[in-house]
Length: 381
Figure (cartoon, rainbow, N blue to C red):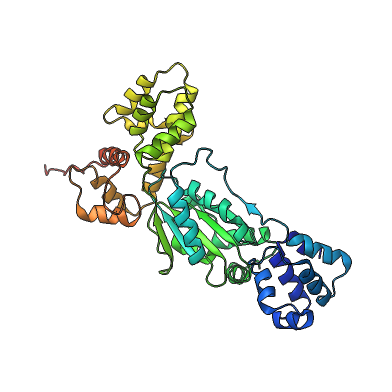
């Protein structure tokens, strides 16, 4: 059991049973342990089986003392969480969203988490993965797809399978089939972050069994029709102010916090950038930073700090859109945007379902409109 000892208890028991050539019915008959209990252990529903149960299973599997001890240890191993980014230190204002997301994971096999770039989708997914890790005995895997630069699905499947202690075939088609079979047999939570291509994403998604995938996206995705969908909206004003206060500390008075938060329009990335600028530019007054944020047409320039940039985040999402949606974004620059543009952008999560346009997105739309100049018709000589 050199490899099985590294697995969570359910996977370890399943692997040992399979290696012994036994069905669950066989193991139940041989051990005297009920089918329900064995199935519960293998699926991770029973996290701390009784010592007598483990002894009966070990004897039925004809395990030696060392392998029996490894099985007992395996059921006490916390499932591995691999690839998770550093959690946002001042995660605030998303308690209801977190509850809804974790609730959806218990009811659906695929969950789409959509929203404007910088709205906090990755941070929310990471928080959910941490909260739910105990419900997935075969572990949690966080995969940063990085939009259109994501590797081939078969290559990702091989990497994921290796992290679960399995090897997939060398040919891509065989690797995808084997990956789906592996997901069917395990209980894994996949966080597939920043997806843009549903065709490349589909081979990674669970189709049966008890594995679950949470997919974050800033664009339109044609995911399975039975998937759940959640759209993140900007933070309410009190939560945005609280988040900024926690990031900056007591050095800035409440009135200054409120003024800075007002210019972030509930966008967590904007709040992080403003907090970074306050903490690192000691010679700057709050009034000076507020004045920068309030300059007409220059709002996005002020929302940049190091490698963090609201404008760059929006631009990445914009460039990955089809031209029809890019045109819809530019249409937001109009005093009264067309209803069709609002509906299209609500469909991909860039604006709220009730069609309220975030002022930061409006500023971005105005900037993109300046970039697209109508062609000047040539005149005949």
